[in-house]
Image (tube, rainbow, N blue to C red; front, side, top):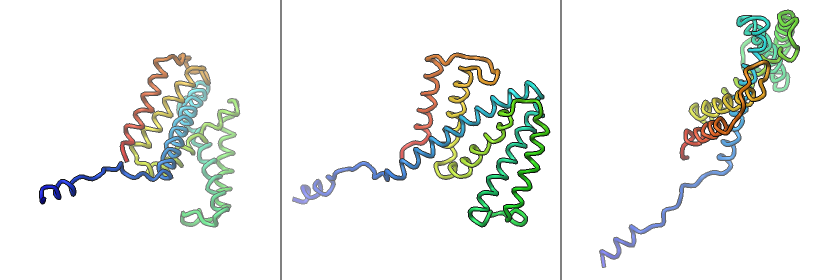
Length: 196
């Protein structure tokens, strides 16, 4: 009788671990945003190449940084105006500070970028989604998953840009081997995410 009792207590149904579907869908959304940030980063690099062809390496970086600073100052100014706080010490507690910084950077950008196509001046704005997503999403999904998603986005975006020869880059057709590479990258994100 004791032997039977032993078997009855040891026999149980093993259920798969409970998953919070809301948390899982939020994580999938964060991964999609990280992939998108990587694709935007690929666009930025392609645009930098077009500016470099006209102005040079350091000059293209300077133009991009001026646009980044102008855009980020504008974003911080809007956030400070909307929330009433910036989280930074004085003088960065006032929206007016960000307006002044944004105007100075914008004037510098317009002066430095004379003669290039106006849409190329937007290249610096492409770094803002990457930095914001890194600060907000990276710690939430883990750095390994975040960077795997960003690299997947960068390589997917650059493959698409290469396919059309965007901004004067070397044209490389997106064939089935390159598509398979993109699928393997996506599989890599899933594998690095691991089991939860």
